[in-house]
Length: 226
Image (cartoon, rainbow, N blue to C red; front, side, top):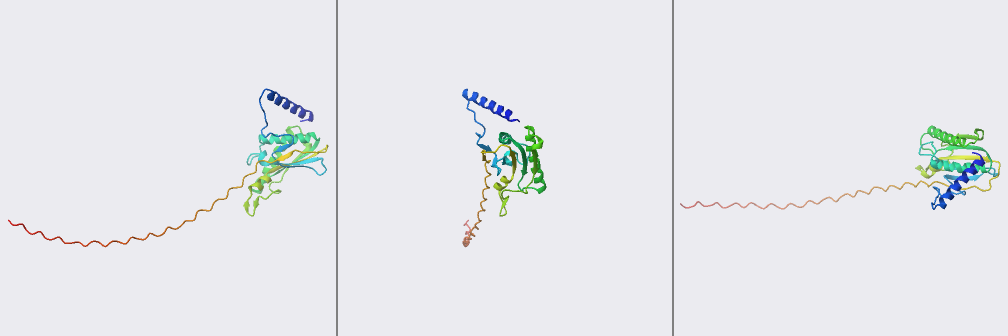
């Protein structure tokens, strides 16, 4: 997608939204995203010299669980990345896939490569030359947070490790980047309450048996006089 086509696309969207608002129909984007935000990004920063950027996109935002197909939200986020790239005359993009440590190392390595390849294919489809693109997967080998904390599973850390980095170089210096808006963090699991202690019941005291009443012999009936 050239810069001219990108501008025309934005102009068409602007005109459409203007017509709808004039007609009394209020239209807001799904996340009310603006030019100053990038939803789905854990981190975003410029390179040291300012001629490039490094964006860390959440794997949970880009893909379904254990999948490598891009979600609708992922395409919105990647379009924002593409806008920044083209506005600053980008000429090189490196795509790096990462996973958490759940599952085998071989499986995670393969998943990270498949996800990096998927993002690579998306940029190709948008018209970025293949010579400007490269991709690699590192599996679980380069975490940015702890997958476990003192032997206990750390869902928040694992979520940060499931990510795709996009490193780009540009010819124009970047003065300002949008603010990263990470996806909603995973709530920590609720602690399981310990089972209530079983209180032994008091042994029942047997009631004393009452002594049986003595049997009183009946008096013999005298024979009747005839």
